[in-house]
Image 1 (cartoon, rainbow, N blue to C red):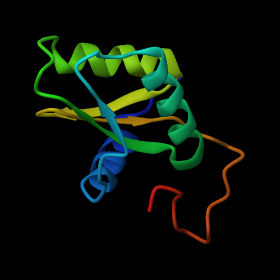
Image 2 (cartoon, rainbow, N blue to C red):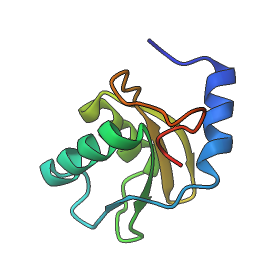
Image 3 (cartoon, one colour):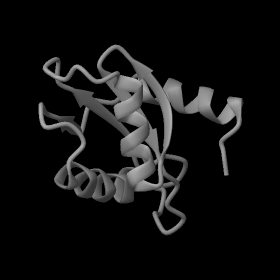
Image 4 (cartoon, one colour):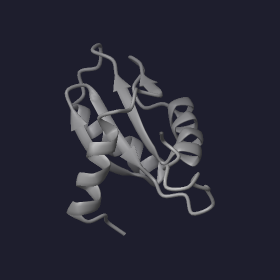
Length: 101
C-alpha cells in the first residue's frame, strides 16, 4: 500500500534528523547491501542511505531498486542520500518515540 502525501511529508521531516546507517559503495546495490538494509529496516523502519559519488547510475534508480528488494518505500532522494521506510508492526515504540530516534 502506497503511503499518503501527509505520511511522506511527516517522514521527510523526521529524516532530516537522521544520519545515514547504510552506505552503498561503488559496487552498487549488492546482495550484501540488500541484506544489511533489510536488517536495519527491521529495527529502525526509517533509514537514511548514503550513496557513493563513484556510481554513475541515477540515485533515484538505485533507491528504487533497494526499496523493491527490501519491500520498502522511497520517502525522498536528496543529492546522494535516499530515505526509505518500511513499517514493522512488531516493533515496539517507547511511548510516542518512534524507533528511528
